[in-house]
Amino acid sequence: MTDAEPTQDLDVRDSHTANERRESDVDSGSRPIPIAEPDVSRRAIERVAAVMERGDLAAGEEVRAFEAEFADYCDVDHGVATSNGTTALHAALEALGVEEGDAVITSPFSFVASANAIRLAGGTPVFADVDPETYTLEPESVESVLARRDDVVGLLPVHLYGLPAPMPALCDLADDHGLFVLEDACQAHGAEIDGNRVGSLGDAACFSFYPTKNLTTGEGGMIVTDREDVATRAASYVNHGRDPDGDGGYDHHELGHNYRLTNVAAAIGRAQLERLPAFTEARRENADFYDEALAETPIETPTEPSGYRHVYHQYTIRSGDRDGLGQALEDAGIDTSVYYDPPIHRQPAYETVATAATRLPAAESAADEVLSIPVHPGLERSDRERVVDVIGSYASSR
Image (cartoon, rainbow, N blue to C red; front, side):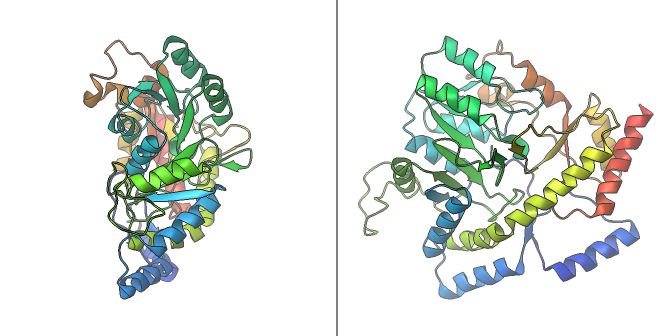
């Protein structure tokens, strides 16, 4: 799952002007509450300016530094930057050796890029159902798929909304069947299971730096891995098949693409990475507020299993009257979105991949009822109070 949210203009500001603008908006009662509010700091602008002054715009030392710093953040050995999250997934699958006709099990309840990347690599996405509470791949459903197919080569679990998939159980299944595990961590920068960050839990992982993600470079992606062979193949693939340890000449050893990240984007990413812990804490604080405020309503709030650390890329509630609730919030100037309806196996582009007989009831039910509300770090307390007041009033009127 990668570039899932609607496009938003980057909000480039310093804290002083931001606070003045917010206070004015809140006092007048006119402030709309967006579903996302990208925040790029003055430090990022200064780093971009330095890159531009050097004239060093394409992939270079700034990208190499960002790769190393992000890999270190994920507690892995290697990072390979890419142009976006989708290209990260595609390149990682190529690096893991997916070939024509290979089956890869993934989630149907995700942005379509997760499955698209498998098809772009020549593989076949095979969908298992999701857990109805976490919306991530359900290990028993995966095991059921494995019992009836002998062409599966890997698993591509999605850490949806910022919550890790059940990686211990999925990795055990992968070990039992000799499969690779590629984490789609595009929405889960900094999420953890038992203190271990996503990105370090499988053979490799992919992140997106789309404007609405927890960390943005404008557009960008990253593959992280402890496997040197995967990192080497991925680094070659994103640079037209060149030897990543070569002299920069025009010897192309394998087929590849131009999936490179620019130094300009990497400069933004390095500044954003410094702020990511604070962004995460703000998202979790907003989520805690919602959890407490909505506890006595019939609205179903997100689950955070024991030992898991959710980073709330989205705060996704659930209601049998999703459309009515969404309209009430929109009428109050509060932006919402549905991630994702229809699920991937019901998409027109997947009519030849998932037959009409394919039934994934937990994913289909979730697609009918989920609604994401603002949880980004730019929320003020008064914003959160408006959100829960509207939800509470609507729920009590039904």
